[in-house]
Length: 224
Picture 1 (cartoon, rainbow, N blue to C red):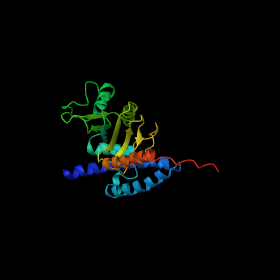
Picture 2 (cartoon, one colour):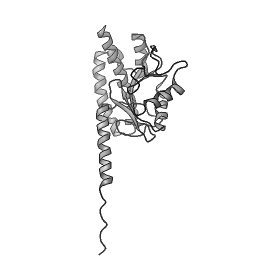
Picture 3 (spheres, rainbow, N blue to C red):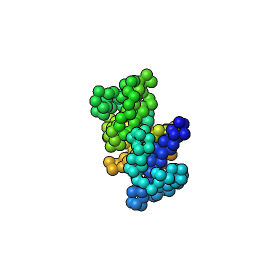
Picture 4 (spheres, rainbow, N blue to C red):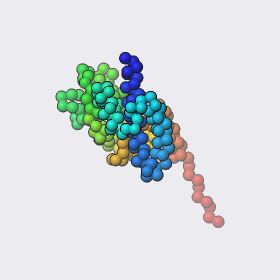
């Protein structure tokens, strides 16, 4: 049984890698140097899985998801985690606009897996379930954009704790790998940063900016 679970987890990661490859392939065609470098690393990761599971090779991510459903008897679902400065705001927005009818995000007895994207609220009430279900990536992204627009600071990670996106309270949803605002046509992508590494990086940048503003400007040259 553990071997079957390991295979399912690895194929899940393989499909995620393929989706990231598809995104970066499109970006690399626009001469995006960051995507060209990312694509090379992703290809190496994917090739390792392909040697182990050749039946999933040479397929699009959509075709891989169909095969995943056939093999494991369940829909492919993305899983993310969120750390938030205001967990109540997360639950309020979800329960008011996104929770399935008759369900709440903090229902302790809710066990069924619904939706294509699952979000675990890490900073919420420990006595509550705090699992949020979304029907699609688009719905999940709309939720995060709305949360960001409310001025809430948060960080979103994949199931392994690697940073995907964040908002620093400025009203924008940003990619974790480069800090760029996520555009409407863009999809989620996973960086190499853990949550703790990301927070240390952000703290360092904040300290650098503060130090810059605290440094007196150079006096203008005296007239000759």
